[in-house]
Length: 221
Image 1 (cartoon, one colour):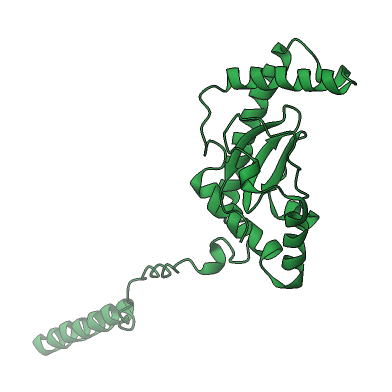
Image 2 (image 1 turned 180 degrees about the horizontal axis):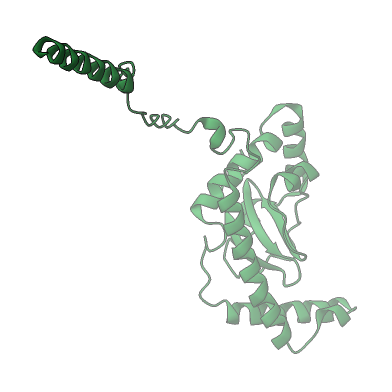
């Protein structure tokens, strides 16, 4: 009896162990935790992301804009003086009347522009730019020589003109011809304001008031 009970207990222990092993199943394989992908490296900007080298923006754009603004400011004063002048130049036909109207307009411009000085429009930086702009039209090859010859053909000599801001341009002195290539090289001007050469020097000329607005020396290469 005792032996029978011992066998029964042993059998139950073995069956319990087998059942526990079956419930646990096969051993699990360790799995690595998911990883977060590393951020992509930052690519430094390349030249294609910057302003293209072949940009059409002129390196002199700032100087050209400044020159235009200064000329526009002069034209505002010119218009103010024109409105204040007692005689209208456009209505005059006789030479004497035209001279009188010009003189009146010039006097009013001097009044509203009393503090004007050389370099107010032809600033040092603008003068340097103008000399660069004039190089292709006046200093290169046969075309440059021809353009110079055209200017010199009827340009007055410096001794014939008194270089003075707000000063009259002498009636007896000729007005130089300015070749188209030179005009195209320089910034455009409003009506009645002109570029004229006196020898190698360049003046900004108010044709309506017969007035020297500003001037730069040795402009011609």
